[in-house]
Length: 234
Image 1 (cartoon, rainbow, N blue to C red):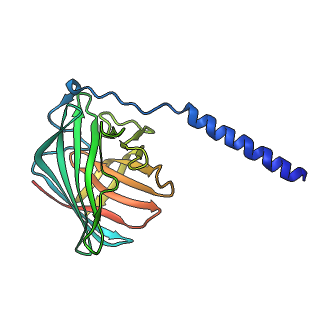
Image 2: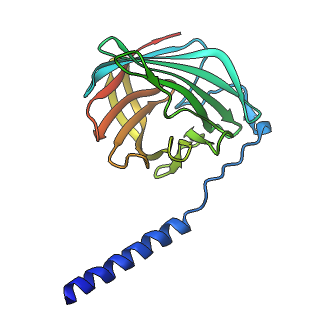
Image 3: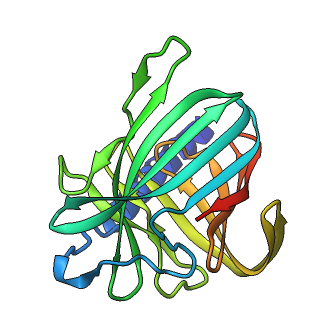
């Protein structure tokens, strides 16, 4: 009986501590001032030059993945900010898996903000889900930072925020990685640890090279496989 009482008391204490920790977490409320944004996205680790197409491939637990990322000439006004529209097409074993339009903008400090996405995830019967789609300023959704202007080791930041639908976070764990992918060999690569509160078991590492952007993504837990940059078309 004494053991059960101790366990009960410990459970109460743990619950109180978790509640206290959540209460102490500052509300996420980024300030978006359209006057603080520029027209060109030239962050060294996340450049978006109109007309560029990046192609990625790799084996995943779903099959052979092929990704084409196109920086379009289109723009979208979100919260008064002019965002660049980037189109992502993902196929698995040559079958369309996902089609997404992402919206990015850069502020005067060089931070690249992610203002949301319009995504369709397809099923084998041709139907699709738009789960994960969001637009900053709509239904409580907020913009996040996809790449800092001055990356700092150990920095933790939200990449997106739409409660219950899009809650990706990143932590910079290295600024000095060296790696080789089919498209090239790179030094001083930025590495992030990527997680989501929606699926705590998932962990992914992403790698960014100067002047290129994303060059490699590796599933660490909750999935398997990696996708590498194989070609860049300008």
